[in-house]
Amino acid sequence: MGIHTGTPHLAEEGYVGQDVNKGARIAAAGHGGQVLLSRETRDLAGIDVLDLGEHRLKDFAEPVWIFQLGKERFPPLKTISNTNLPRPASSFVGRDNEIEEVAALLREGARLLTLTGPGGSGKTRLAIETAAALVPEFKAGVFWVGLAPLRDPALVTETIAQTLGAKNGLAEHIGERELLLVLDNLEQVVEAAAALASLAETCPNLKLLVTSRELLRVRGEVEYPVLPLAETEAVELFCARGRTEPDESVHKLCGALDNLPLAVELAAARTGVLSPKQILERLSGRLDLLKGGRDADPRQRTLRATIEWSYELLSSQERQLYARLAVFPGGCTLESAEEVAEADLDTLQSLVDKSLLRYTQQRFWMLETIREYAVERLDESGQSEELRCRHAEHFRALAEEAEPDLLRNRESYLERLEAEHDNLRAALDQLAASGEEQLDLELAAALWQFWYARGHY
Ligand SMILES: Nc1ncnc2c1ncn2[C@@H]1O[C@H](COP(=O)(O)OP(=O)(O)OP(=O)(O)O)[C@@H](O)[C@H]1O
Ligand SMILES: [Mg+2]
Image (cartoon, rainbow, N blue to C red):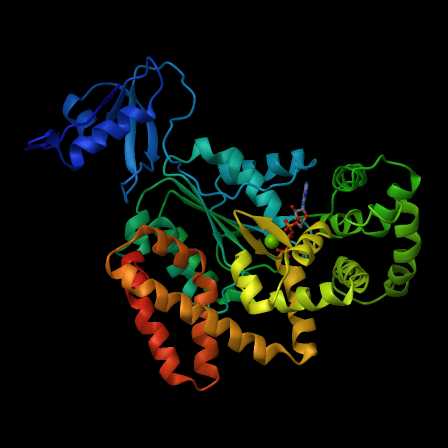
């Protein structure tokens, strides 16, 4: 049962209006035997209730605070969700202690906790798994903000505001809410760190869990270095991804790869044609050459060598497509890949099989370290400029196609443009950089409706 207090409107079909809807949505969020109240009702009734925190309800832009009558325990509410954490498609291995430690630091008062480590060490994955475990402890929810495609530090707070649906000032919106924000890949917009530190100072119940290859070096920051997996965990990861049984070669191979999760995944993606022993033979010469370098972190070299090895094993067609897909900073749909990068399904599939490309929620995308290598290959290919122009044109056409529908406020186009936001931004930059001022203005004009509707101003 759900109870809300507000003003209904009487129409021919009966009582209607926002408040009637809200009551219905709150009722629908509960389980059999559970009585839920809105904040308005709780305030009026002045009774002892259990605070279930803020939740997102269908058709309501702002989160709604929900309370429960009585202390009985029920499963989580059937609301849309109070988290947008991505759900990784692959299994998670080990890291029990790390999750405990990171969660404990946040519980014990760390307001800005940075997971540091080189590319591919598992920072993002550890942040996601820890944050997922903390969802019930943050009444206003746990939100993930991916910053990898951003290059302009000024866009960091804007991107957070957009994720939270904050229209009038981020600090005002967060206020005293108990909120956990996971800010992923802050390293290339690290100048935004000072603004984040003051946000945490202004909002007393906000906690920030950041992943970054380097420390932010701001007031109040607590560092948690993400170390390689334990060897048994790396072996388990290799066997899970490569669908194989552990043996001595697998142990040796994982050791040679510094037990670095991404390197282990890339190597495991080759077990279809090579045995672990063969992979070890082919890779170790290359890795040995690198040992003794003076890198700040030798894991960086290990990963680079593994990505290179993986790339060199590709067919020329796969190499070409891999490099071309680097043109999409925000990942892409199958249609965009076909149109901009002349992709074909088989080659896309084999890049996914080799762990160089990911496919989730009907989009193809790359892990950051892997995309960085692809960008280098694209620049080297001499096709970069052409691809960037084609990319810009493709997204300009999409925005133009969406414009008439946006004026009629069609949700489907809004969502489509939202998913392409990083690509649209890159298209704007490209058109400006190549002196296409007219087209750039046209794209901006086609998009203003979208920005307005989604509060990107
Ligand atoms: N404990 C784990 N169990 C299973 N998979 C893992 C684990 N840790 C990391 N991975 C996988 O290894 C890969 C690299 O990890 P992740 O993306 O978290 O690295 P990262 O440190 O965030 O890298 P970057 O600095 O490039 O963002 C991902 O595919 C991730 O899913
Ligand atoms: Mg990451």
